[in-house]
Image 1 (tube, helix red, strand yellow):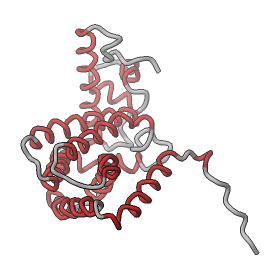
Image 2: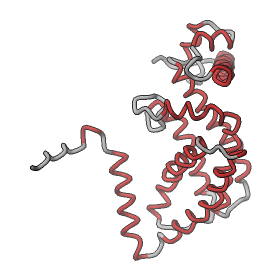
Image 3: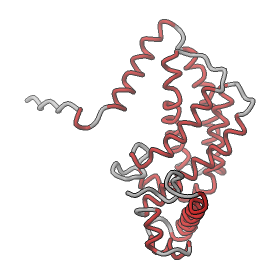
Image 4: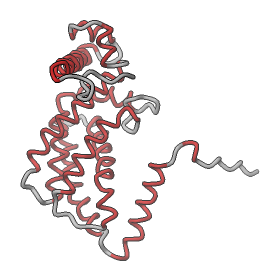
Length: 246
């Protein structure tokens, strides 16, 4: 796929700005139609018409409707960062920083809650580019992980050095669980999710601090090794299942 016109290494500043504006307009049109018609009934042609661009131009920026939703994920991570980072300034207490990060996400994502479930149903398909572990999702995944890296690095948290190095990615994985809970949370204003965030942040803090205890370090390192193995293993690396014995 050719480089997008918004790539600063391949475009002059003015076209890049126009490209970003066009891309943002297409995403906004898609979100409006998703709210109005639902994900399944929204077509790329309808999105192009709503955005005031040609169908070919819409496909130039987004190869499919799924990739268009990926554009929304990109924007959501930017909004999460823009809300969270200023609020983290001057806060050192780790549980408070973690709560700020999660509550900032809930604030940024709140307007999209009514149709977020459909997005996650699509993302649950292993071959979908919306899968949070897919190559296509690398940008929002890395952007989200960077927020949790800022949470850790700017905090007063103490723990096993190996665990602290892996903690931003582990917090991102936990964030995926919080997001799934939020998708299914029908309480007013998703209060149950906010309660979950409020209660789990100090638990994470305590667990990480306990990792400094010498008797617990081997278990912590075993868990980290397992995470590495699962992350680095490809389907071709997996052993063949043993034949069932009579």
